[in-house]
Image 1 (cartoon, rainbow, N blue to C red):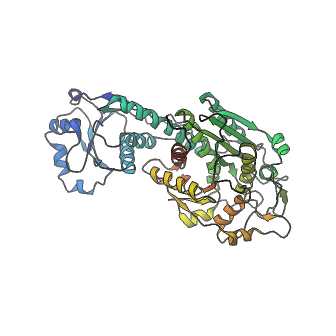
Image 2 (spheres, rainbow, N blue to C red):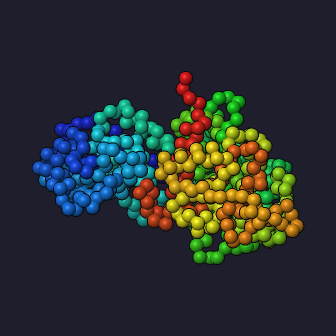
Image 3 (cartoon, helix red, strand yellow):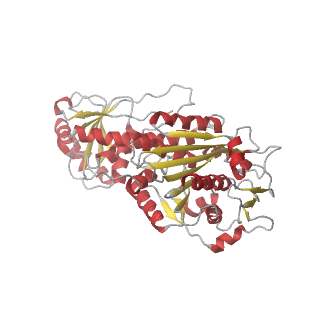
Length: 492
């Protein structure tokens, strides 16, 4: 597992700069070095930073990006990394700047002169998130990374900011680690076991096994996993940090630990990426960890349905008719449309048991949403304009792309079955929308609800400013902010 990078925070001491080894990072606003530390480095290098900023090459460096001076005269350091960070900047640029520092980090120590850094907490977050690396299964020699220190003007304020950053990053890394794990390691049993580890942070964790799920009538969920040797499970996580007895906000995640498509088997090409089909459950787990680490003053319940969708002599077949916990019957037209079956039962159970203030469910649900939105935005479907607007605002503030999609009776009609109450698919046209319409049938009247289709944003095909290729942890930041802004008990 990846540990959160914990930069050391130091009080400003300009007298140590000349002898500092490794890499020194200075922040500039585009016209001049920012802060006493950066100006001292400029003087020690006889104006090398100023000359760089006057060069034609500097004009190509965009806000949040950097360049470097190698083996600068006047310093013991091997390099000075010059990061362009305007004094008036936004969160995304500050995080990108932090990411640029992390990407350039080598084997030697790194000292960031951050006493004049705008949006220090965002700079720290970008630095920590981009330093993530999942190398658990690489057996060759691993490159050691040097320690990172930041010289800051207000040590107490920086320590408080770092504590919040670490709480958020721990949750994001928990999600990334879960999504990056191979399915032969992250079975339904192992996933549940890792979630029980949240008890150490004060989260109440309960694991429902197949016998209990059968008693509850969760036959849609059980039908998905019946062809697997891995038993299906539902894990309930409760964080009770708000007013005692007050209804919680609920998060529900699809946790298909591997998805072959079942009898409606997927093509072989690209199937290895179906280890990420538990991404929705991974995000729920990450949010719950962050809430616990930062002692959020809110009541939040997170539920995940953990299954494996495999072809087998016992596996569910196309044409099977299955009864849900709600009591509705579903004709299974395509066993590869399994995530909505898992969510349907878990969502109904969530409402029956907890009567939540609102629900957000997350799932790597459809390829159709990738066709519609690519990898830049998750699809947002909702029955409640106020909740949807609050989420979109939170996602925008955190730089996590999200786009509201339409719903309506015309799409719902596509789910009509000749033999049962509904089919589990509605054809190719509007596939992401008909999937949302299916899930909506298991949301009670008056229950505020959002469905997030995160199929396109869960796994990055290449490096991003805040993550290496692979699991992104998309959604942890937005949902943490949604809860912080709208559901926490206020001081006084």
